[in-house]
Image (cartoon, rainbow, N blue to C red):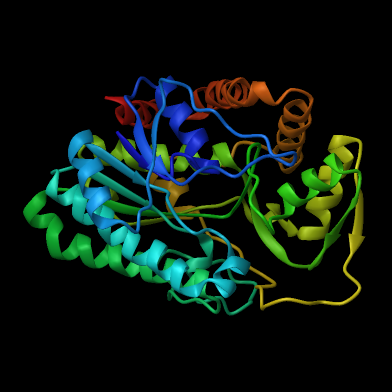
Length: 357
């Protein structure tokens, strides 16, 4: 099984979960972000991760040929809205052509299943109360959102053009705003809060009233695993686009999440920006995940409070002992996996297991 972006925030969690399911995992990505004090992440020997840029078509093809994967889960991306303003060409090259490179490599290697992980921001966001469904129009105000909408279009075109000949089932997964331990990206709310706590400084909240569909990283990954398992089980009708977001009542403002994070930690200081600066960012974005609910049996299992508490606990324990990076991930995977298996219907649980077959 090949995971692009294995060195990234979600990629690390996904790789460890796949290993626990019994999968043989290989992957690639860029050097992971450092911790707040410059701490580097060392990958365990069992998680084979090569430092490779997805914009390098030849290198991607060579790596994929050597891996000969049945399954490709594509997470490699330039994932930040604000960075896409400063580096639009790099964002487009990574998120559009990088995807095309990997689709081409997977096709050449006759992979059975390809999952492209995109984002809730791929929709043409009209800032209304309506929750976006998979059939809604794609778009994007900023370069990042536009690149992910293009990624969705490329995926759909590849599926319609080549899947009937190759047999490779191709789907996309659109998750909400994902939080959880190990994310050290710049200009993201939770990492910014953690860095401020580590430095004993206040964190400035830019848009406290902006509403987002927050979810824990394991909730999004459980959706990725379910759709991948269903396709591996031969369910060709599952090769389509999928939303994985929290329930309607769990889309809450940035300021509230920040306050809950500080409260769960028991430390930290928040400061509301006195003047709104920087490029455009969406104010309201919500997903309709009813398709995943009805056809996959997927649910976001953690309460809003648990999502924040699990995240705060991970970072607080990590700051106390950074060498526990992987054991902290493992512990939360095991807790979530146990809850997932006790909740899923039996038929869905069997499909979940196909991902490691």
